[in-house]
Length: 287
Length: 166
Image 1: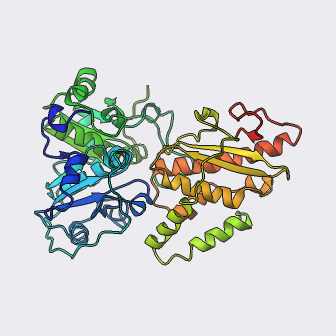
Image 2 (image 1 turned 90 degrees about the vertical axis):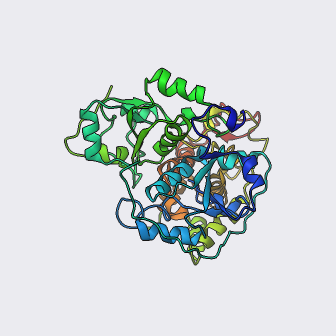
Image 3 (image 1 turned 30 degrees about the vertical axis):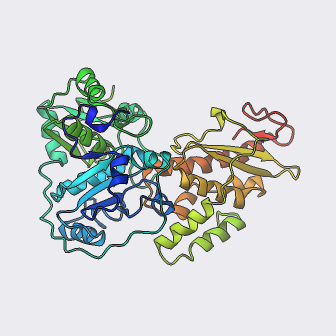
């Protein structure tokens, strides 16, 4: 894959390479944070100095289906020793989908000093770069966060319904089997079930992984435009809602559209199919 | 009635001794470090799709070998270099279920995955890991159904092996 600067992205501010990270390991203004699906990965080896940001314990509200509140986010950032000025570089497994999820949650609190390491953990590991097992600990910082602001990048069910009725574009980033309703959820899986299968009317099915190369890096801008604009006619000025099952895979697509293609108004519907597929009397489309 | 065979129940009790999440994770990593990939006499790459765990993004393959004692021994391959939880589960399934009566293997519940890794697993991770348990169950059920008369058939097995299709 070519260098990030040569891929034609709308902005390269939010994306760094593994090489860049290796050259900045001792930069005190940076904090590297690993966010994985596999709960064993961080402890088995991580980038020297990296902290763990766990998608369930660190980003979600402990009781409600919601994200952490202001005090929770402050506690998280104080734990990892970050200030408002610290640039947090996120990376992880699964082509960075959980890293993008964390990145997206950070935006709810206006922590825009954040980047994604292209290719994530797999690329770092496959390049033979150093991994350490010692958990990183930093002195607690004095982090003060604003109240969470959901208005810019997050959307709720009533807004989605209005969005559908207005005929505005949606992107369903789930697998084709989930999109068609052939597969609802895993049998006996306790957390993410849905009573109905299908997709939100009008949604285009663009599985999140189409934006990623085999090595987990992001595709070039031309390749991404071919997928999102060429095949699916999404335009940079469109008001777009992305969703999946719980909002994690769609964070990856949200990142791609917002930062790599420069789309101006993309919001993530984290209620996603686990909410929509269980709601009473909302429209559902099945092919 | 305890749904877990004795060795598996003991291992679960051992894991429950962990004082906190970090300690438990370290115990599970230690277990994963004992992972040994499927021996050549059972299977060599490219591994046949018939042994691949459905929906497992760690690309876990499962084989069961019929031992002279007419018990089953399980073998695994995990092709994703980041599939550490899959390796951990493979070790647990092999070390605690190989040699157990097939009738008890068929009863091992899929929730075993949550007993080991906790309930906060993502759906994708759960699917893959529970799929590995299902492969072991399926193998045991086939063994029970076919009896000793059926000396399989293993489309993907290495020549001369006694591996069974899961």
